[in-house]
Image 1 (cartoon, rainbow, N blue to C red):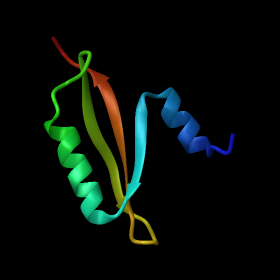
Image 2 (spheres, rainbow, N blue to C red):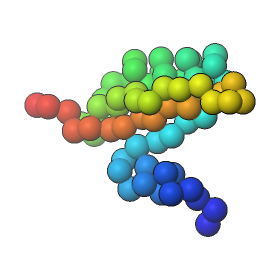
Image 3 (cartoon, rainbow, N blue to C red):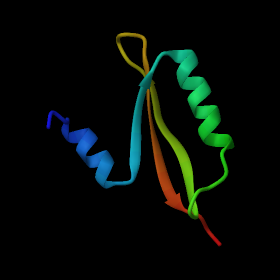
Image 4 (cartoon, one colour):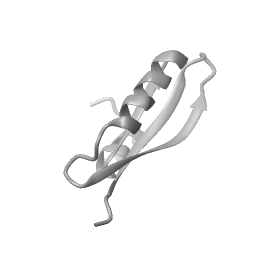
Length: 67
């Protein structure tokens, strides 16, 4: 298993890390924001940043929705 420590931590913390070209990242974030909550969990976009190769990296974390 060739996973980086950050990626292992992400799997354990109920979050996903994406690395995409700018336009693809924008489209993916819009999809995430506009989808209804699943199983009582809300998606939050965090740590949007541009990498040295021009790609965008961002994290999607899931939190329990307030009732």
